[in-house]
Image (cartoon, rainbow, N blue to C red; front, top):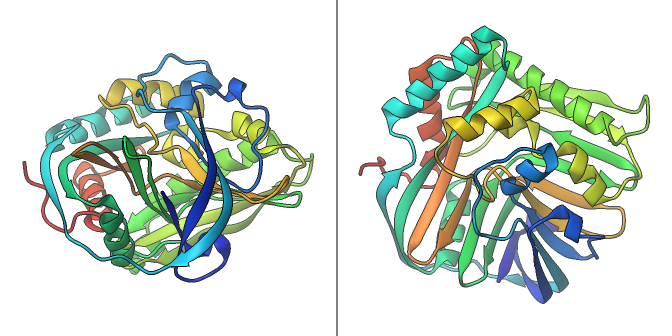
Length: 344
């Protein structure tokens, strides 16, 4: 089962895909092309292959390609489910210690910024599609989707555009900067510095696939209000005629969920985080035709297997990050998914 919120299709409501075929891959080298119309997911696990690093990974497929016949509009489903927290990958004290380790790496000149994440584990009972609709209702976003294969399912409530290609125009809108206060975000030098670093990285990544001289930053430090928080993003665009697979090879993983410089931060993330990110911090989206596609960054994403479900959240850490404030931001991002206090 695949359900998309209507904004993927420039419509309102929810749409279920009539699936023609599903293919799983463990490597980008196995894929020659992605036939439209398809919904695709690229796992963060691919970072090792693309950046030539040995990283922790999961047993789930690294790439999912779902060939779609058509979409039909459906009504929102309502039903009961239960989430019972039972563990987290990093305790609060360990997450704060991780922030200090990153500050040390910045002081040494090894990195400039790292996105540090945590995994929150739940016992899950009920139908996961009900979880998806409640999650979306709590915080409507442009890139929400629900995917269920029986053995595992993915619930995504992302508001971040990784890449969109329409004709030869390619656009990215990296998010850096989160707060429940608009005024704080407008005046936060830390968040603007963080956003600028990632925008520059995305400008560089798009420059690898774009025509020379076509890359530009068309929007800087724009703030968008969502139901539970405010987010800051910038917009980078360019001109390219390359295929989705060739573009992924040059731009993945997304800069906003790794850090600067990308390869070194991904290497350091693997030592700082005891969990593999799996689909979280990867990307997913719709391939419309031979040239056009839209991919979101898989933030605000949960992955379920059996009766266990994991939700992930993270923060961008820079030199002047305040550990307690970063921890508060982490739980702010969890709030839309699990509104109760996370206690184990």
